[in-house]
Image (cartoon, rainbow, N blue to C red; front, top):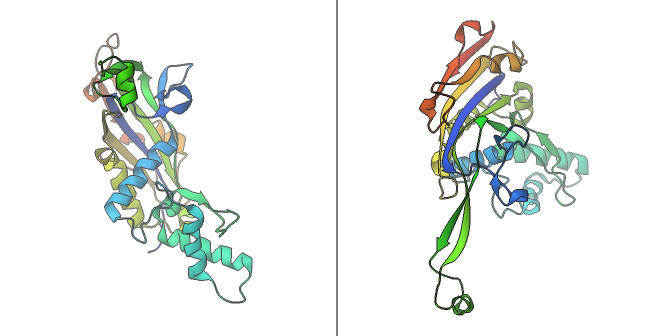
Length: 288
């Protein structure tokens, strides 16, 4: 499969209802927030994790769509497979690393897409800079994280039961955002794709993952999360035909209802993509 030949940028809008889109472990797992503006944040690695999980489900973690960074993976063991596959007697260490890096790109989707640091002391496979990059997602408006108290009607041990004098109820907490619409922006570089082998088939799988990843990530903690809009800018050339920030400025998200009341649904917003001012050499497509 040949690598993609065009540069892309994209805007993803997703929302959360009564859930925690990305907890901060340094803040008791409260939803991440910009303390100066109270806008909610979701990290790039959080979104990449969901893409990886979708691809793993869709492709059964089989080559050439294996996932390198997955739960309980031992990275040196994984990289050992590459060294075993490319090792030739008399080969220099540098050649082994270069060939092992190519083997990892050929077999692992997330390395072709996002890159990886594989320069470990054991089974070194070098470093790969991925063509697909995401910025932090930010809520369109300030959010109000809630700390909700819950009760559990059972305890874990008999000791806990005796200590509570027959009352097995214990207290817990859930951190939620009543509602938040988040905007994430991303970039796909054709020259970097040529280095990793990120192909048109990989690109189509990535779009599918972006649009469907929340459907396979539901949990009580995350509430209702859904991808609402995916707007893609495709350049005619590998290097691109317009600056990314000018393309992102064409996508506007505004309140459609009274701003004095908090938003509680996607229908409270209007999303517009200014197709009339798209620069020459760039096409705009709404995939969702």
